[in-house]
Each structure stands twice: as structure tokens, then as C-alpha cells.
Image (tube, rainbow, N blue to C red; front, top):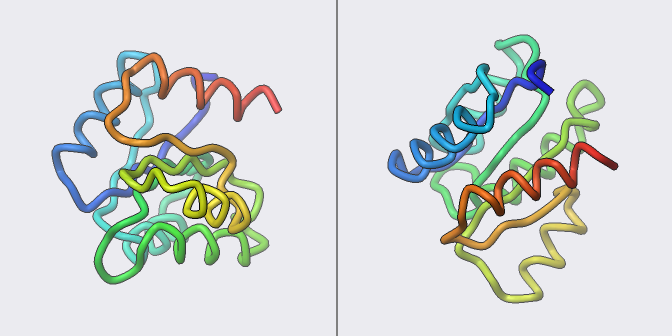
Length: 125
């Protein structure tokens, strides 16, 4: 469990800090951050060992859905678990994200318990 290296992708510094602090409290030590999808892809390619992505959907440059599609299309990263954390709560959006390849989905706002439960659910599969 402690060998997970997270990449948090969100254009909101506040939301990145909330997810970062929650992951730290859950015992995860290695955490990288990116403001949008293109930066996240660049970090995946240049920082070794990232093996879990927590991403927002609505971001400039490259949104979370595009990021998920890019990760899934790249054989080097295609198996990385992806948790989408977003304000988009419409069922069609959730279905679209799941079809794109996210492993799980959280609607903001969320509690640390929900984040932990979703991460645990992904890891147990």
C-alpha cells in the first residue's frame, strides 16, 4: 500500500491540497501534482513510478476525460488506476468517464472517508 505513488491532477490549488492532505493522512507518502491533463501526461512520462492518478474533469488545456483517454491509449500507462474526482454528477457524465476508462468516480464535495473507500475499492479489484 505504501508503495503507491499518486499523481493529483486538478486546476484548483485548493482541491489539490485537500486531496494531497487526505492522501498523506491515509499514509501515502509519494504524491506528485499537475494543474491540467497535458502537464499530468508530461509528468507520467518523466517521473518514474507514478502508479495511481486522481484527476478532475474540468480543466484548461487538456481536461480529465482527455487525460484518461490518453493514459488508456498508452501501453506504458494503460493499467494505471484512475480515480476521477469532479463536480460533474450527471449520470451520463459518470457513464462517459467509466467508458473512457476511469476505475472509479467521486463527486465533489467529498469526505476523506469516501476518498479512502474509493481508493481501497480500486486496489482490491
